[in-house]
View 1 (tube, helix red, strand yellow):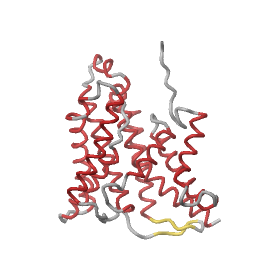
View 2: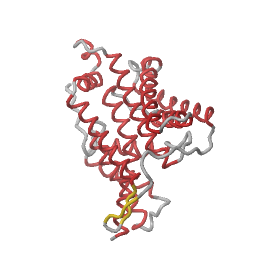
View 3: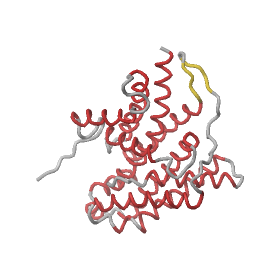
Length: 293
């Protein structure tokens, strides 16, 4: 029983990592209507900014706050100077642009900081405590709690504020939003900026666990996208639940299903994704899209 609880606890910690990046993807989709494949690259860049600022002697928490602010500005400028040129065209073209942006950002990070493994300190203490026969680290618990707080703030933003309502209106129909007096361009910049800032938080939480390299989010991005599709693009809560479910199930499958093991556990989220989408194509918590013709 202790082994089972430990696997669940470790899976929740891993799932929190997937949820951190998945929430940023949902945020940019909810505010702009796009799926941003460059989100992992922006999170990597923010993590390197934390590393550089911390290296100047600043306290870690101050370095994280400054990196979050810088990421917001960078995200807004990317939307203004690059993405906006493709937003009114073919949606597939804009998606390809974000893939290219991912490759560009990670390449620039490698050029500036090299491709060597760097260490970023943890935001939480190293100590752990026992729980029902398992060992829970304060680092995993802290990451998990931060993700829950971020999820709640995103829900509050989109459900309970005028800014969130305006962002959703712009994402749903830009022409109608513009006719209603909403400054579409400004809100698109805000959406990209908020998503990049959230990516900075994800980078600060995840980089200490994975070690800081330009490609550290490549695998995490795949899992995060699976969680987004599984949970529903319109539901931050769904993404967090799906990410935690993926983390727990792949851990359990690796130990209790010998034919899967640790080598094939990466297939677990995609099998789960296939099964769920056969029943609910919009995801576990997503909303059906109704189109009038």
